[in-house]
Length: 304
Image 1 (cartoon, rainbow, N blue to C red):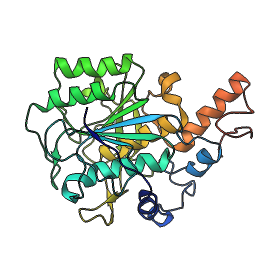
Image 2 (image 1 turned 180 degrees about the vertical axis):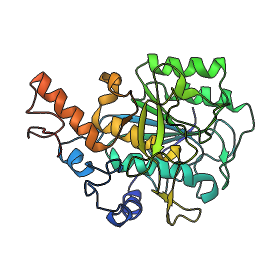
Image 3 (image 1 turned 30 degrees about the horizontal axis):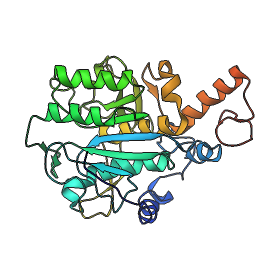
């Protein structure tokens, strides 16, 4: 399989600028008044050694700019067109998704599987049947610890089978709920085993037009006013379920909760580093393993 590998050396500085504290009101851990803040508890998560080391995340999206974000591997674009490009119109969305994941799970390996060419209006074009292209991307990504897909795609028997095979192989699949309040094209998040994500704001409110009672929604995460790349690679904010899904993917990769505790990822649970820490603390107390949870020798206690 053809691929492009990029070193992440120069990306660290860019990410530091993109995700600097002033882009996150209240700082990296928040002030406690915004329960859904994507960075709530992030510093504590990393201090306890939960950084995603040894885990691999597959991002199924469009083109990426591997010069501005740390990507371990960029696979061929299954829809034709560039896979790795500096064109902001084509690559800013996926680059933003990768930057959010990396901020939460900085030691995880991130692979990008492009399936289409994005436009500034959010439309995605493909030189072939995109459902088949996405199915091939899932086959390529099989074996990753977490697979995240943020775009709408027409379901098919082939695509459904590829998703199920990835789950059977041990991958946790995270899918953003389509933006429309009426879902008539894509319901990948409704497949058994797929973690369906709804976007909320920092206070936990659901944006207008989004159906919070959709039975396919498993978890909630901040997807409103997220730090993002602009078309010219400046810092902007963006909103949508495609901004919330990488928060969930990053938290799962950083903590390892996905593989062993999928039952926790139900009931429209709010996912932040802080809520994951509460779950990890409970698991440590139940197992009696309070000495080596994460990567430190400090006991893990619930975050206040």
